[in-house]
Image (tube, rainbow, N blue to C red; front, side):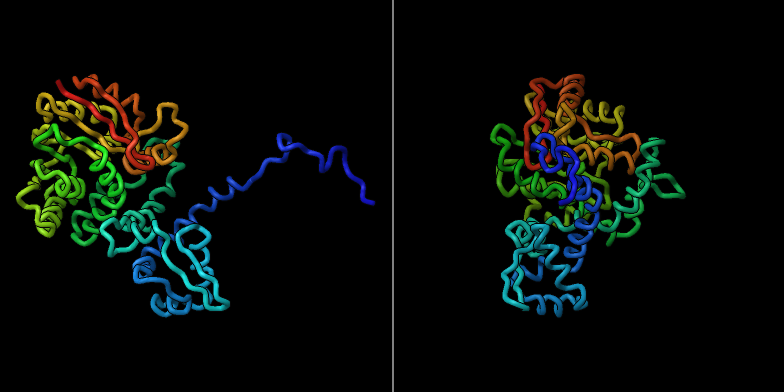
Length: 355
């Protein structure tokens, strides 16, 4: 009989050995993200939009190597992105309700553009996280100018459109939730600041026929927004205006919104923008910031905290913020009855009223 040390095999649950599973899940998280990114890039979920297919059919349609097919598809099953019906050597795969809704290009809720950005760009920038942690300097900059990396995209219309679609993908679910939760009946006009492809404006316009809506962004993006507004037949409802919110006046309205704007600025600019938002809101109106607002205890909203690190590696002094910080800046600007309400997933809306 083998000898044992005292207490071996007699640990209570409270005394059990630490488990490294969570550490390994996070450490290998890039693997899962790359698998998902490859599935989006290959348009697997769009292919499965027509119904389930056998592994051999997917292999043929996507030109996969036989060595890779089953590992690839079964990993997506294990990660919860596909469902599988076993049938010997010919299993059939189909989308989950979530991937059918959000990763099928033929669905208007498609957010795959955001996955493309994570898959193709962010990893290179985040490889310099250690440097940013020690220096506070951004990594996502153009070597020759020191400007943010995304500004290079303005020279390439195709790349710019793909980037704008990706950013829209980050927010479509939030915009739908906002349109469903917010009470618009008290407002006649709305300005969406930094509205990109006018997704928020178009979603709201289709639901709230009484609203006159303006969306603003830089000239190159505004033209893309106008194309989408025309395609939706909303030209008489939405006015797309070329404007830089940092240097130009913000068109006034009863309701002013800004999604993922404040988090990409430093403290001084955040406060300046809050003053500009206040000036743009008509008396009796409201300002709404849609963002990954961090919980005041800074423990629960992991996405918000990681997005703040993302702002560090891209911009240096930009950061995501807590609800308490939003309330403070809004009140400093003159707003009253300021509150933060959960919106969707890791996203909340900061709501500030003007007397």
